Length: 519
Image (cartoon, rainbow, N blue to C red; front, side):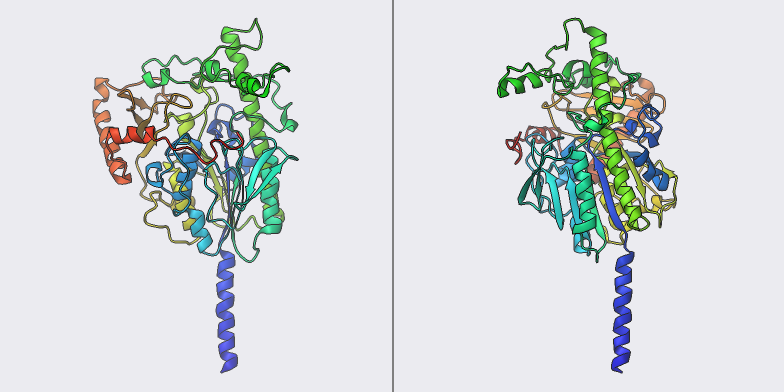
């Protein structure tokens, strides 16, 4: 009898251990400000000129999502939305600038993975102020206001040990640390969930010197490069034009040698507020704008090349260590970015280049290679989907939805519209707070802070969003339907506050923990 019971216990234990071993690992790769147009898998306007072969491997071996969007196009708030599966007004982190820090005591999807037996880690950019929670291991950038720097990056390890990394460019350092954790530091008796996160290609776009000679030929300008913003009042008041709002540090113009540290800082910042400058007495007008653009786009894409290399290193490691078949690998960015569209850099707007995000996922055991999907996805869907793929119950208070069925090629009822809300103003780039809705075919935006302006775009016939159709009689029915959809989604997501309450969120003034540290 004792031998029989022992056999039962052995079989039960073996079944439980096997079940746990069968649960997928997760590598969640996220860059910062990586535009869809700069990921060659999307065959967009820069694809042939600036390929990303390693990132594309994820799409080739899995599924490419063509309609993935964020809920608030700015670094920290997007990261908070991803972690919590909730909109900014619910998770409490709605601004980068003077909006306080992320409430790290709240529920996040890494905490849920950890509670369910996963070994969890985050390595690289964090940018949320408070120390990471829900991770067995963390090593995150803390200098330069939590942004991190490209060189001499300051990290905090496990919330307490400060490390200054001087040997490697930040992208290479994050790649090294992530693979080192997988090799030497993780608990190999558990499945793992690793968040592998880069500063690149965030401003000021300083590439690893090994890529400095990449892209010697000039890039074409986007067809909207010389946009005059006719019919779009909020857009006309921006402060993120390549021509007028890039500073000397952005474009790597060295200061005179005799300047003090304070003077050097002022020298580099010159241009942020529209101050005119040129690298020479003879360069001006359209030629100066073109020069700035070429300096910008080449450095940006050189930073992307570093990320692509690091992604390849991770994919090669997983394959070499027989981890690739049972590991979910995601590549995404915290939002999109302007690479000269509308003459801009940066993000924030609900216009497509910053609203839309790259997203691709591979899971060889479950997802067919070379597949694609066009459903409207949101960054708040990422956590619920990963939990669902791991067989973990998705909390009912998460506002995002699992798109596991889409990944497995199944038909499902899905959302017919997505809701967006941006709050930060006026610092940094004078982008008006706005909310809006997109159906994929039409988009309606309301700017409400110190103006009352609406924009309506027909995305199928005006992909660049140049023609504001709001107020035109022939679009009155569509406008009415979209306004009704906005109200429905605001109620659904708990964002049905008054305009005065929304403005009060923009006016919140709470200093960040990192705001005066190592800047």
